[in-house]
Image (cartoon, rainbow, N blue to C red; front, side):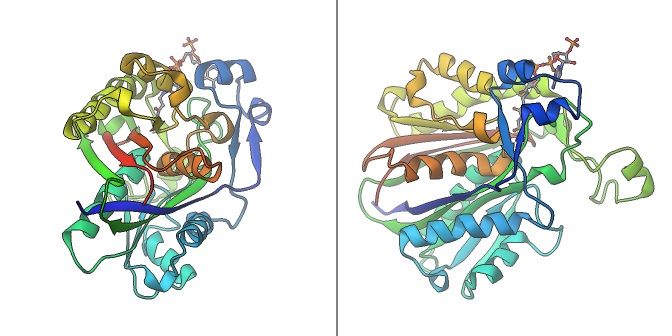
Length: 329
Ligand code: UT7
């Protein structure tokens, strides 16, 4: 059966490191508290003048090279991000220009931390639903440091910058995307927001004075939602494919908090060795989180052909999503 297959992966992180010791000088917190409550030790921070499209470009180049696909062969570029270079034009168009992918359509997609799963499922539908699309670049990229309030200890300890990309093509056989699930519950939309900068609260002196252009989060509520929704989403895609957790070789979950991953692993009754984790090094990178784990693991040749990967995302919206992927072409 025809499937959307991952032909290449890539990732990019800025060089500058923000450690827990650095944060101790900015807000009232401690390395102990951050490590024990979140598992995070470091995050990467884009320097002045580095925007989301720059990180997206580096990750995309690696994915294209690995797949041995030229930018001109791209039919579509989807960038999942909640920190675009600017509200308009789409970061995907800026990336298209940087890559010189002149034949590709390009758009952004915002499903916050679930963005990469949403983009993957969207790309799969383009590939399988039309003869016009053969190669699609799916990118998750964020410069969250541009919307983090570094005076708010509830959020500034969590987030970092980075990008991950996959190049999707199509092929017959067992490997590729097997099942996807996307969900949303707008009743929880106020739990995680950047209140200003849109049509509800356009930029004004007041919105700036009230720090409304920064991320605001009710951490506890989001935490509970995450622990509840990961096993739920995993169940949906496994049921659709008639598979069980024992069939899965690796779980790649959105890296929001190591305690969320541990609680989800316990609920799913899966061995911790099967859970891929890089939150200690990079923190929460929103839409870039899942492709960053995927890209790093692929670079280390962790996956062999036929391995079953279960990707699960959750985040602002509230959004949830999962994808079941059999590795290889
Ligand atoms: O990617 C999008 C999805 N985002 C998430 O999934 C985030 C989910 N939420 C979380 O990861 C956790 O809720 C946090 C890490 C944000 C917070 O951890 P928590 O265990 O839920 O802590 P809490 O908010 O219940 O706060 C416990 C205590 C409070 O003090 P009191 O009221 O008990 O005296 C906080 O004021 O810890 C305090 N606290 C801190 N202390 C030191 C909160 N932040 C910090 C801090 N350093 N950075």
